[in-house]
Length: 105
Image (cartoon, rainbow, N blue to C red; front, top):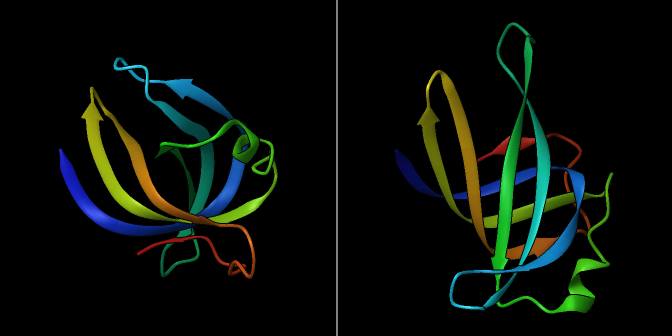
């Protein structure tokens, strides 16, 4: 397992909704797709599962499928069998003036 502070830019794949954790605290949840390219211009698409703690119901309506967003927070990369799963617990989400190029930094 790898954990790091990260800024992730991508496109929302599944619209946001509000869920509750085991302590009944609400959080915003959605999946975003990030297309990463290497030096040979080979691209790989990854799904990042995003959660934003202490969110309100009206925030979920703002983050719809196809919207480009930048999320800053703690990225947790876990290996399950042969797959890598990416989980991002966000501190801030920005949907305005987002760069055109997907990235993880």
